[in-house]
Image 1 (cartoon, rainbow, N blue to C red):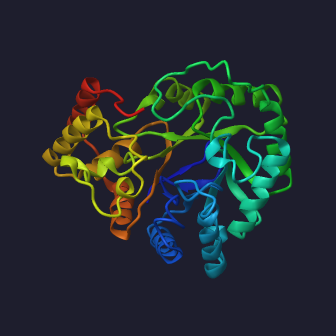
Image 2 (cartoon, rainbow, N blue to C red):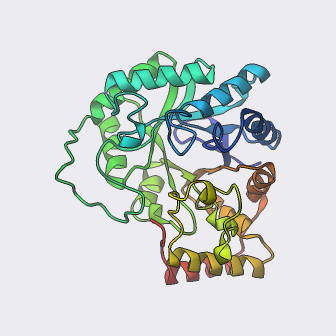
Length: 346
């Protein structure tokens, strides 16, 4: 395993982070435990979860993923071996069944306390804001569109104050963002620069893969200059970059077969690009999944790649990508495809 450190800390994390959002719906508790056992044996020490999980969000399942991690901690008594990240659900219809949504002080405290109870732990190493409260950065939308109906008032100082207090209490150690824009990222960073007693955001968890490299537009420069690390989620584009959907295939029990609405990477251009990436990987003796993950792993702004799998063989291949190095010829081929079909799946 290769290790990095969370920016502005001495916390060592594996370059592969174990994603967990299928546990409690697509995967059983036993399967979740099996995945964690395998991952830790391979040197993975970084797990990411959220109060909202499993996905798709539903009141009958909400919180099950954290509960599965909690029973694993209780069984193995190994909490100290894991760097654990979780998230508070952002504002939206998909999360209103959890509690009153938004990042008020009461909401953040309630979210943290709920996660700690389900996870059976006293602290969360990295606590992230899952979505902005602002109307921005929707799936399928490439650019910002100002909405008159967005009644958000700047509360970033108050959010950071609440997170600061939770850090002082020892309930969370560090804080980060998720699905955030360049403006939002810099706004949080500047607030903590001006007010030195407020915690600094150290990571941003956003989608990044061969079909969606929008992080490179704005956020990558912020990442490099401000040292805020990318936690790349969806590195295989909801499984599309495994190649299993090529040719119109729809395998039983695959995410798209179970949840057709999760077809973010299913456009004609995305399918065309995926086919080209598949052929390029085959020319170089790699599977598409290996090449796609190795590309994400190689980015200079990356802190860790969040991989998720519904089966153990998928997990083994995904974790193994950390040992795959892409040569200059292959990287050039990737850029040629990207220049022809850039970001087909925002």
